[in-house]
Image (tube, rainbow, N blue to C red; front, side, top):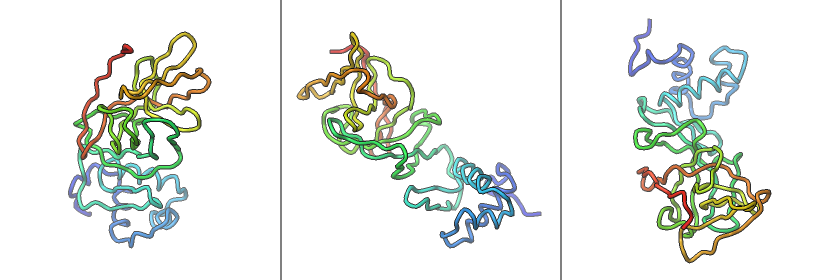
Length: 214
C-alpha cells in the first residue's frame, strides 16, 4: 500500500490518483484525458475532484485557459477567489460574471470569506481614500442595504459606490468629495454585492463604512 504523506490522509483515493496524474502530466491534460486516466464515466466527477484538490491546497487553477498549477505541498489557510474584470470608481466601468480573469490566493485568517466572495479590480479615484486605483476589492454577493459600499451595475457598466435608498430613488455616492453623487431610479441600478475589504500588496484590511449619509 502506498504510504500517505503530506496530509494525503485528507484526500479521497480518487483525488490522490488525480493528483499523481497531474504531477506526472505535461500541463496539457484535458478533462477528458483525466477522466480516462481515472477510469470514470463523467467529466463532472473530474471537475469535482479538481475542486477538492484546489480547496485542500494541492493545486492552483488560473483563469487563462483553465491552466492547472500543481503545488509541491498543500497550502493551508488559503482560498482561491475569482478575480473579475475591472470595476470603475466612476462612470462607464464594466463587470462580467462569466469572465474570470484569474484565481487569486487569499489568506482566510486575515479576513473571513464565504462561498460567494469574489474580487474585482478598482479603477479611478472617486472612492479614495478607502479604495484606490488598482486595489483588489473583496465583495460578498448578497443584498445591498442603504448605506453599504457596493458593486452595482448602472448605465451598462459596473461601479463601486456607497448606496443610499431614499424616497423611491437610488443615490450612488463617491467617498471622494470632488465627485457629485449620481441619482437613479431603482430600476436603473442592479446591486451585485457589498464591499467587505480591500487587498493591497496581498494584505487584507477591514473597511469600516458609516451607514449614515454625510
